[in-house]
Amino acid sequence: MPPLTPPQLSVNAPAIQWYPGHIAKAEKALQEALAKVDLVIEVRDARIPLATGHPRLQRWIGTRQHLLVLNRRDMVPVAAQQAWDGWFRGQGQAVWWCDAKAGTGVKQLQQAAIRAGTALNERRLGRGMRPRPVRALMLGFPNVGKSALINRLVRQKVVESARRAGVTRSLRWVRLGQELDLLDAPGVLPPRLDDQQAALRLALCDDIGQAAYDAEAVALAFAALLQLLETVPATGVSAGLLERRYGIPLGQLPAGGPDVEGWLAAAAARHTGGDSLRMATKLLDDFRCGRLDAIALELPPGA
Image 1 (cartoon, rainbow, N blue to C red):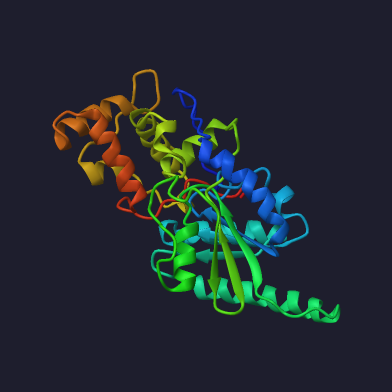
Image 2 (image 1 turned 180 degrees about the vertical axis):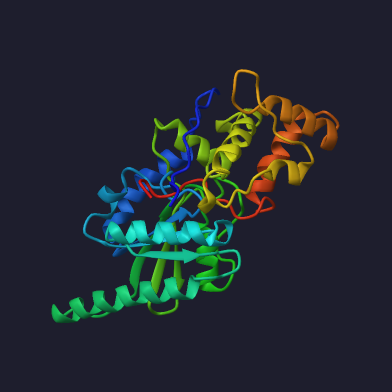
């Protein structure tokens, strides 16, 4: 079997960093709210499950129950889902695959949260305490779909949701029937992104504020990354993807490596009147909206 781990990419671009004030403020409020929480529902982007895992997560969870959700399941190929399922099971972690936009997997997630609440109330009854709704925190990086999941669970738009980072800026409790209270929290990020490969993937998936990166530099890195991922079938990137989509082949530099700048210039001349920034934005938007088909930017380590 060929290796499933995508090749690494060197990114010659300004460092990607983003830690706005509302995230820092919300994180302080989050730490206070954790004392009231029974269950943590962690949401990650299915295209980049490792890059959207917060290094402080285990400290926040403590002894609480933990449900791991990989959202946007529709945007990664089945082979990648199977690889991640096996890897997480090997870590002793069950995974709930969801598509908050279509509602796929949301009912199963709700049932898992309610089961957690049932177990909680059985313990409360054993101590002579009255049952109450389970209090669940919806936690994750910006724009991974937390608010959209809550709206699906409640079956109405109770929190603002959009496909961009930074929409939710404060904590808010939402009641889901008589069994579950959900705490919607703003996206959280580490104060510093030391792993710039992971930061690049956050930028590609729009899971970080657009002020954090140069769109043209990220698009150039993406074009090179796509050529590398062509060698890993489980990622879903087929040979010649850029040429089929935009009519421009990705050439090679005399010294080796893909000529991404030449490709971007030629694609811009054909599609955006020579505006390379507009073409870069178009390429990124096409990926983010699924117009390049299902693509996994990460696969399990050692797979």
